[in-house]
Image 1 (cartoon, rainbow, N blue to C red):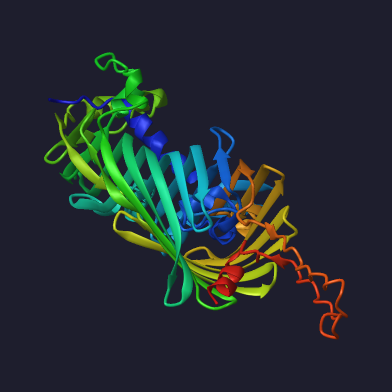
Image 2: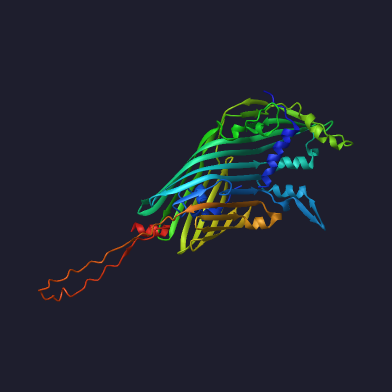
Length: 497
């Protein structure tokens, strides 16, 4: 089947790509605070809040947004006197030294319920929506577009190493965690098993195009060498008259997959704890509304516009693309999830204060992005927790993250943000991360039942006998015993003894 490339379709693709610079993955402040929040289980399945039961409701309970790119506003604009001008040359100069990319991650909690069974076991049920956008682009192509083709007359300019991925899927899962005594140390092991339902996908890898500048009229002929796009359901987002909108598709469809999260936390000593987690191991098999669009071997020629009629630009582009008809076929293909890993250590500095260190890795399109964080979390009573984290991310440098959690009875409100310096310094901002939401927690993890001990009663001596000296002694009553409170990891360490 042939697919006609229209300006409307191109604008849709440009819009999708451009959205990336408005909104990718750090979240270390939230990870350091996550043991007390239901959504912390999204990062380490061994985590469970201080509650017997928790409920997270749609729309209010969990928003997790991450933003990273390789440029900032100050890379684009230059101040000249009282004016601020767009400086594309400056932008290209700053990007030449970097791996140019845009990345967006958005996770939304649709519903989550968790409960404890006994003192050492917990379960959870959850539904989450996940959105991911990643775009790697060659800066040489932008240089070619901006500086022109004069240096390439009569020869090919090759633009490659370009790739992007856009994915939206919904996960339905069950989580399980239990505390064991491993190597004589309390260790909580958790796992989450997830059924995945894919909604949208659009991606290409190793996209390569050759652009030839004609020596006679300077027209441009673009020939696609390696160019295949995998697309799922994007036709549902356009007003294509040939494609009937399928409402039920976005509720539940045939694009199925499986995901797995694993996590553990060991109380290594009375004050030192170690944690590790591997999240989003899995795949999605795409087959409903799935297609492969193959551009390999296709080409189009752009001859320029009439300078006397600048409004003809759009028409000139559309005319040039009329002959670009890639082969489109229905297909089935499989994609992997973008896995994440966390390795952490925490040290109990005070009874309510912890110092933490974490290394996080995020994988996308075969590339790894690493974040390193050092933080401190302080609990005030049972109603307030605050966290501060210093982080280092390559290409972004050192930054600050802050987090707060309020709990009043069953009501819990939390917010955590990373890249504070980046966010405040808007002209130089290239990243932003924020988590916020409201949960409802019922009960506490510990039990404080006291054992009432009845003091022994000394029997009265016979009336006819003189009481002996021993009988005159009164046996003291035994002190009532109280069960220990094992509400935190330090108490678990004491309990093992």
